[in-house]
Image 1 (cartoon, rainbow, N blue to C red):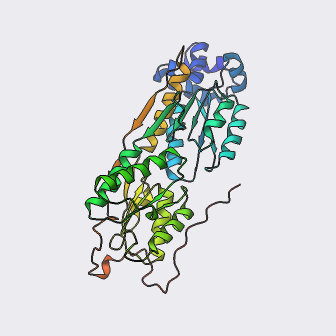
Image 2: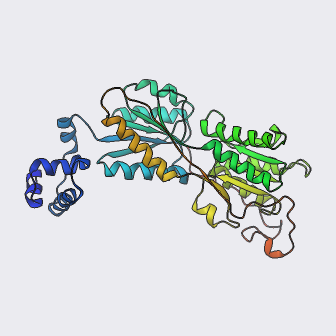
Image 3: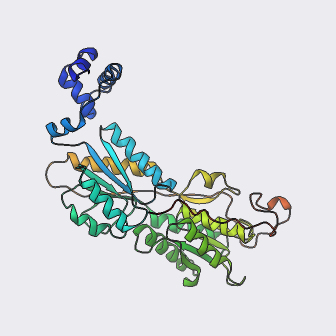
Length: 365
């Protein structure tokens, strides 16, 4: 079995440099690190991670807990974290809480057994209480915040994005604008909802609680909420919907199709979060886009800053901008349909076809 000394000899560096290149790559020049990696690969060298951790007193692992790994937004967050961790020679252990505080608590308990040096957490409503069990562990709260004033957070401008989405619909002439909201004990959901309400009131429109229903961040709940809103009598039914995340937006689009409502002729929709399906659906969806990958990278960089900082840790507040991307799912209310080509071709041509139902998704343990 090849040793670190063999790798160093082949790469023509000292044993200490070879060791640093594999365990602390940020301390070694890129060209040197690549030479050592090539030598290790050529020899089939595998470092003993446990022994190295015991010698150095660090595991070079971080914990990552997201709330819905099937959501493209959260998958992209995780990708950004993993790429940044890998560049610095860290390994990320990924857990999924499924929006359930009990699962989040179990994930944190499991992580403690792996001795992570830090944690990146997309919090559930129970996170602030759960984190009390690991008071000395450096933590970065990602996407959402628990309200802990001492926490380092990496978020986006949810208020700005919610306001931009609502103002866009108002500018098109909509006065009955409904919203499908996430859980109101989650910071992102409350910020987007509050921005929606403030934008309506700033435009002189009445905030109607009957036009705001919970979608709980899930496709199926978004579908049910949209069906209720869009089944209201015509004089009360919203002509536009602002939907608080991409999973709920999928449900809202499916509900509109099931009711044979044309987008945007009968209903305008703005979603929060961009994705490939939002860009390629018919019509392409107007969205508030978040820089998900950059959020993940920033969260990892902030955690490493905490790990390498000596002395008292100073919490940071990093907020990245959102962007309103206007596509073709929004238009003026009551937009006339003059030709058959205005019909959404992805929708059944007549109501005799069975409605499209939302996917149930994987079973929840």
